[in-house]
Length: 134
Length: 113
Image (tube, rainbow over all chains, first blue to last red; front, side, top):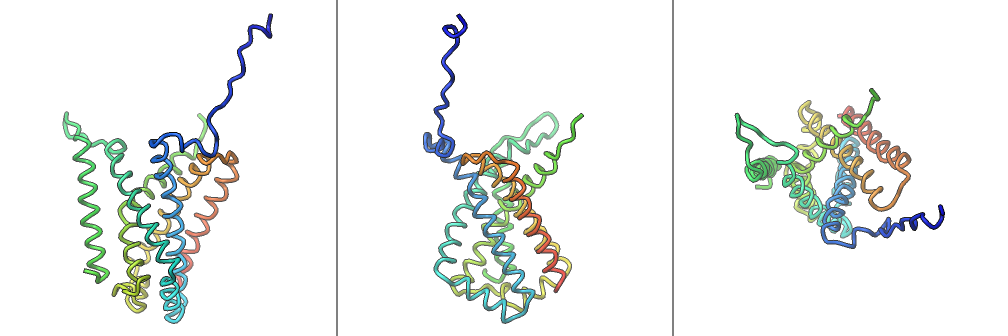
């Protein structure tokens, strides 16, 4: 009777490499995850810049000129979009990761998230000012 | 109790994610300006070299590169899994090696200023 009673084996319907196309929610998850590719690649670019800076003025000027290639400008724009997406998604889950309790009260999520945005805005402005942009 | 390296990996991921959330967009804006021919004052050779020569500059540059690399490496490991790559040990070894070598390289380059 064994065979008759056995259930049909479970067929995995979820395609391994393309499952996230099924729902917008999964797509947003993947968009959030792939931000690391752009942030990681950008950091490696900074590392190259640091190497060139350590080698001398001529080498560093070459690096700055290389940044002006169209492919580099395009990479910057795409990386900026993904890094902003990382910032928004990171701040929006921050209240879950970092609940702040004062006495009996737990601060509302919106307060914790807003505090992150305020600090981010101030820090960005300070760095732009420090860099001589504004 | 079994020992786990998860807290260490997770700790750098959380620190890296937080640092990149705050810092990466504005850094990209600075180099994007340079890429469009409007090099910010601070990215000029003399000023940036002077910054990297000081202890505060060295420390900041190292922390930014170190945490950005480790945070990205950890998330990239998960991303590979999500794209259907199941060779996790291989992926983990590869991404953490790149992050480790990149961090060492940053320290070596900074020591030359």
